[in-house]
Length: 612
Image 1 (tube, helix red, strand yellow):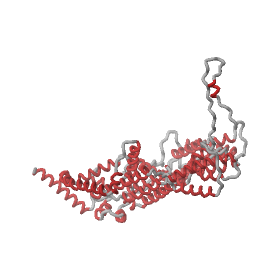
Image 2: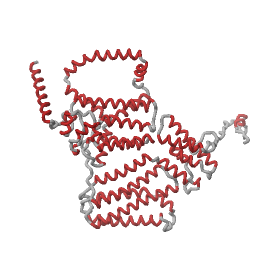
Image 3: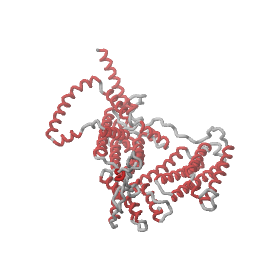
């Protein structure tokens, strides 16, 4: 017994001496795998400042971070286990609050649409409260500003693309304070993927770390002595809460609402919703940074490839330029109307084929340049090769323009859809990427620069697409170029406009108000417009409110109020607004056993002609 007490006393003395030495020096090297390596910042100056001034306010945190070099990765970690536990429990409370809010909005109230933007704002507010390190990093604050923009875009009109952009900005906001600098898009892609993959297991890891930290601080004997002291306050509080609930109907209703979901299909989906909401919040509040992402492809210097030499690259570029010049010359002659098409080939066949293969050709050309003409390589230093590459990339850009022209001709001959708009945007990004590759080769830029510049262009296009309704753009173009209104396109696909829903409402109202369309066609347009208007009214009043939907509804009411009321025939209609054709079913009588005998039943079952 005395030996055990002596061992404990020696251990206590060693711990006290270690704490005193750390307080005198302000920091010490973290041990591999120890609690200091897990919970404390790797920056010594930051740990010293935070130990003297507990990080309670963002201003205090930012003052502490001012002494930490950015290259070391600035973080605002607690200086003690008790502060870590307090912040951990605070983040748990924020997560529970967000889960309750999401359950109330999406399950109990069955809200959707623009309400996702309101929940995104709540998630962003919880992130700013639970991650005070964001206040200390200007890059993180810029990411929060972008997330705020996308949250308002969700309120305006929710969509999967907008939510993805919001989540990306919020995830970067929570990860940026943990990194030294913004390196390149390839490493950040890995960090975001890792953040998403470890999300289902992060709460378990963090809970284990907190329990491990608490065990280091509190001995088992102290816990055993403290547990009996909790019996009286817990039981007494439960009794008083029961009595107050019996006397207070508000508390009774509150406790009655706090119940676990029933074992049913709705209860199962409610539990899944809780898990998704909790993981979404916890991933942002307690992020785990990928420590060793794969390095960015350098893309400079010589790369040993079989058959690649300055001579072979020169001959290849000469041959490629001749082939591409032939293709571009044929496009100029035939698509420009300077020459007649050969026998058996029409201009429509020539224009409507080959847009996507030409884009694939441009991508292969870009891959060839990246692999064989790396900055600083022997092939890139040859002046003739550099000139040939510039000419070839210019021809590829012309080829991309030809693909865009073919797609536009296809749209003129048929119709415009959201996928074709996306294809045109993709072709524009391919052309921009080719120009960036040429610029990198001529100015000796790094591979990280090439990745970042193309990523910035793609994010710009996606941001514009999150604010512009692609369906409305397609509907307006089809309505104004349809054959029914004197256009050169095909007949208007009313079923497609019906599937677009509220996006096609205002273009349909514009088409319905034209005086130069056939009355039967106007009736079908009005029927489709009424379907879309009814669906929008149900969404706006039934939980799917959005700012754009509210604006569309007000615009529709304002325009329709100025027009005379037209009634159409009642009945069930097809997606194109046409009435179902009613046909009298023919009922065949069973064959009689007597040949040449016609039964009275078969005569009675024959449909009689009714006068119209």
